Length: 359
Image (tube, rainbow, N blue to C red; front, side):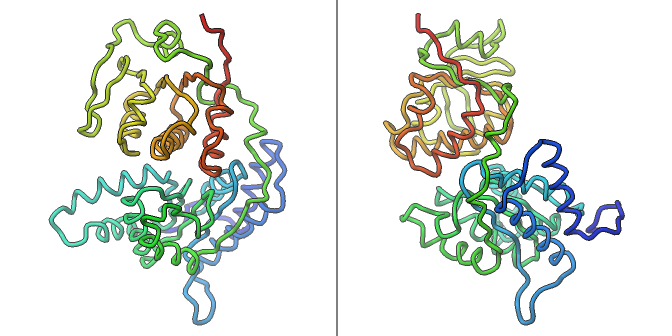
């Protein structure tokens, strides 16, 4: 069954519009032209998609790809679209979590031909509408998995909505494997409605909650046990200086208990780590502290990118995060790759900034 049990005379498009208007009213926001146009595009697309309407001799539009700068309301628009979509078989997934799920499900088809295609078809059987948040590609493994997965989902008739900071053409900036992702870019450009919300208003500037999702403290010593332990809330029976096995890879932690963990920046990000490693840690420890942060421009690009991926995942999974740095947030993010650092800085600004007096 595709539709919810709720019945109404209003069209699918009107339902999407109504939900968005109610969400704006509830928060006291006003949609600008770019955001309103994005909602209208999503509403009309879903109405046509569910009714099976498409142009003469033209394949149906597979989905909508929303792109724009940091904080321009993309996720806000998509979340309300998703909530209003009258479909039971729908999912909203974060990019990294979906890739981890994909890799795990492929294990069930080990030894069989083309496990990726088999998993994609199973997902297509389960899902009528799939919404991706924070769609981006920085890893060759991700590029290959995601590119082939998209093609199968589109071919199987799954409706797809994606948000991204990148235009499709710029989705895979690394020239070493850009050409291998080119077919996926062309698929998006040909089969999706690509909608820019780049001129939109920054909704994050309206945030009134100062609980946010943690704190950013500076200038802080990387080994200040008294400060970090108390802020993190380490239990009396916390274990210190231990090595965890994270997805069969060693990771040394300063301290941890059943709910909290204190990590070092160099151990977390200067060594090869995957998004699945960060997901593993966040699922096990709902409260985390990372100390030893310095200006990201001082590190190689791969180190900075791991940190950015971690922040993406932590934010999406609502981790309670304490960051202890030697410099202010603006100094930390200065001089990096504009799009990625801008997204991360926007999310980190929702941490409570706490300047310290060094002892």
